[in-house]
Length: 131
Image (cartoon, rainbow, N blue to C red):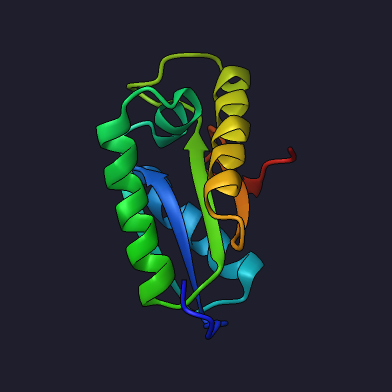
């Protein structure tokens, strides 16, 4: 990453589900106090990153993360998971467990980034997941 830090941008990795896009973006903007958030979208990113099996998809996600982190010169990174996912049909507790593991994966890969997990509940309310 570039050494210059941009305090007005962040990056989130979010599910492609449209109903969780704006809540995750708005929450990120609020907690980071930023104007702009780049969004890397993928179906069930918490599952993909927590299982670390699909290396092609992980590579694509990480290429997009790196493009955002370097291009926007930011160190803020979040991964989002949500209730009611049509693809990842496991309990919310299991999804949160995957989210925590995905945060760990990203923290290990991007050691100089501030990585958080964001959970969007069944009422479409976003919150920071405790690790």
